[in-house]
Length: 105
Image 1 (cartoon, rainbow, N blue to C red):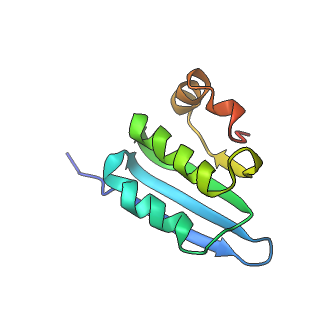
Image 2: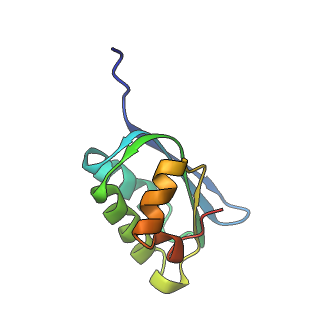
């Protein structure tokens, strides 16, 4: 069985002041520091996009990390989109009412 290395990658688009964060593998507490550094790196972006296309797992600590990002981005005024979400993760987010806190296309 191959072991997938979990990681967080980040890019910043200066034109529209958007930080894009992609999570690969398990989105759990082991990624806490990488995830936090990814959104703190550019200061305050006005928009954030969290791409979960390659996330294979998500636990409650990942939900907590998303809430910390939301606080960093301005709380109720935050402009955060969670993109490329699997149906299983979408259910978790809906049960947790995260669909009311984040844009989920």
